[in-house]
Image (cartoon, rainbow, N blue to C red):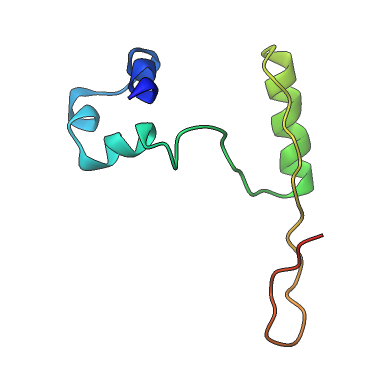
Length: 77
């Protein structure tokens, strides 16, 4: 329920607000940090824009590589 307190900060049309998907913004499993996947170059450009807007910088949490041969595609380090 506390996630719903953020609804006033969301810029959305009436149509969007009445969509079933709008509630996903406030679901505790999906509300929070934003996970982005992009190239290194795009990340650098995005981070520059974010820092210039005086927001918190991006934090890199991983790298996507070509999957290895075999049946294990995810490596946790």
